[in-house]
Image (cartoon, rainbow, N blue to C red; front, top):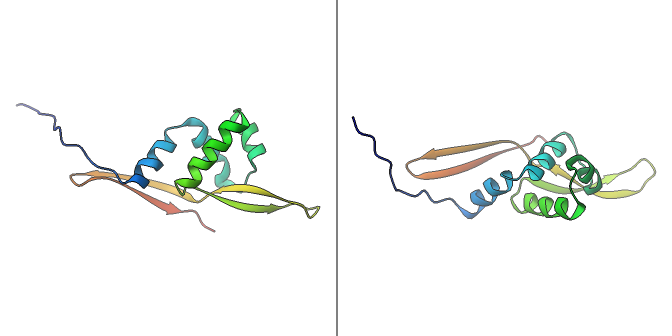
Length: 110
């Protein structure tokens, strides 16, 4: 019995490609996990990821552009407020078939 590998190349949409690319980065994954239980500031995420603030902001921007993260305002007890970030998904499904690769997101509960 012979098995042949196919040279057929599956095409991804630009959005699916960006989502998979950003999830390939450990810092971005850490940010997504950290923000899944509530909004976090960039400063909090910098401490959580043990990365530079410039790296964290780049990953935040990538996650925002990929619709995996949302920006929000977090109000403090003293009345001040700050920009924070929260995961917008709690599930990502990747389907691979003859038509290509499809990425489906399931939104986190509001």
